[in-house]
Image 1 (cartoon, rainbow, N blue to C red):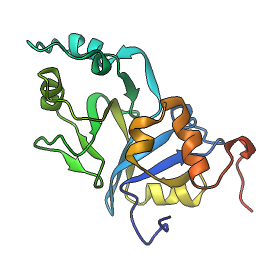
Image 2 (image 1 turned 90 degrees about the horizontal axis):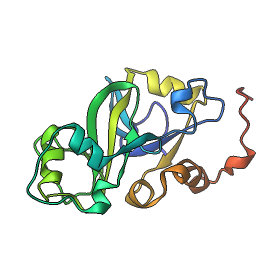
Image 3 (image 1 turned 90 degrees about the vertical axis):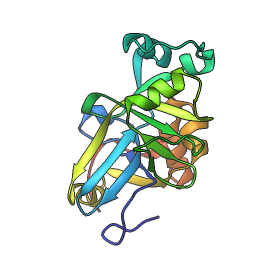
Image 4 (image 1 turned 120 degrees about the vertical axis):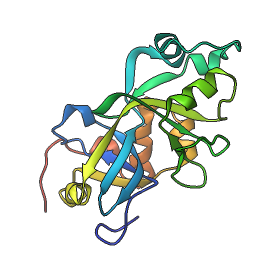
Length: 193
């Protein structure tokens, strides 16, 4: 696990602690897409937006295509990626899809935040693995490090398996178990020893 103050957390998963006061981050699993001395940006990958699937989003955006979008893509749930810029979409995807503006998080995870990515998917150029979110979570310089020191977040390794192949309502538990924490033993009370 990375050490606070010694390195940045790009490519890691932030898991909110049960005592998190902000309800937008209750049992949130956030893929940290970028983190440096200026701040951090991440996508909540386990909070689905009710009644919104990728196919409906394509229709709402009036993105037309001669290609029929496969049901597996059309039925993908859309995630609530965070409270910042909630009308902006972010595609977290496998390494087989590249666009101008794609950010490589690690060898298996990338993020693209352009309308061109959505249009490419509608036209049949979808990545093998993908997750779509509206909005993102952001932290100013030093803010994330401070929150980690205050025990607001646990840090777990992110993996394509966890991001793309784990049910969204099970990602938080799986992330906790991955770092040796039994989620059922966590208290929703904050404090420090």
